[in-house]
Image 1 (cartoon, rainbow, N blue to C red):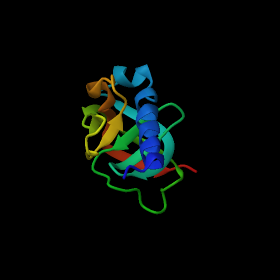
Image 2: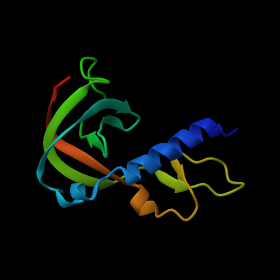
Image 3: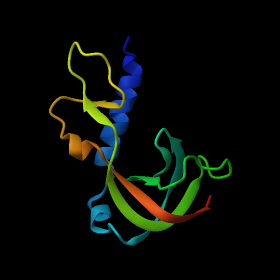
Image 4: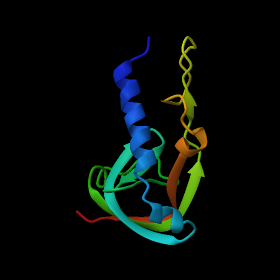
Length: 125
């Protein structure tokens, strides 16, 4: 049985992640960046949610208790990965593992996420 509330939440998260990557991030790939946002632990690991971006922290599965839910500053090298497990759910097919996206979605684009590697972070609030 499909839990539509959960599916809607996942779709909203994917939509937000896809639209929440400002163009200037792509311009800064391979460069050192310093970003501030709220520390969140997600299924894919530790993430930083800013006002207009979502970034994952490479090699950090979860934020420690002292950072989780708080504002943090992260510095490291910005990378792009095309590894979100997205798929288009076909009518009548059993649910697949991953993140369902609407028919017509560019799966490559939907699988995009930004990562900060070699990061250092500190709680700022």
